[in-house]
Image (cartoon, rainbow, N blue to C red):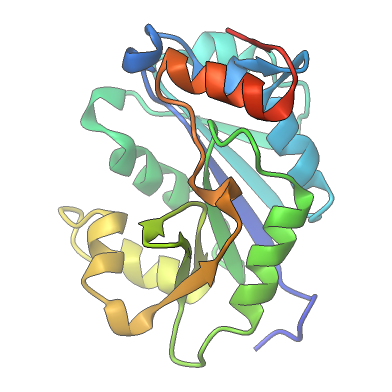
Length: 210
């Protein structure tokens, strides 16, 4: 097992959704204090020195791809985004390198995630119970994101039936899952409706623009 702080990390960002409840819009391009949520995440993740970052797009592929200037970001287009988020997860995981120690699966519309939040999760993952290979944060009784999976867990999942989603795989292998209890509500805040934008602006004090 790699020593603490020496994990080879891959990051999978999910940005394929239609944003229907938000008014059919690419939520990852919503701007908080003039910076898109996608750019904010990429900046936060850069300090983790990931060896691979994959971004799964779908409904708004052209708009999102047009603003990606980092040539090291691998963009994967989900040709069937109507099949849902779990299809995007599988496509993204299939594109990840096989020798990664840790893959972090993160939603592109989590506006409060910063470097410290990722560091918190990685530290918890490194201290997880020995028999576990997957982890997600729990705030109070609410399940949060990102989801963390060891490279071994990802390889085992991908070798399972294609009819099994990643969420189903995690939920049916509870003995291999570490539910990380935390009070950090950054892991349970995402953007689904216009009311969420108002709440985000109120909380941060920054303008939020679609």
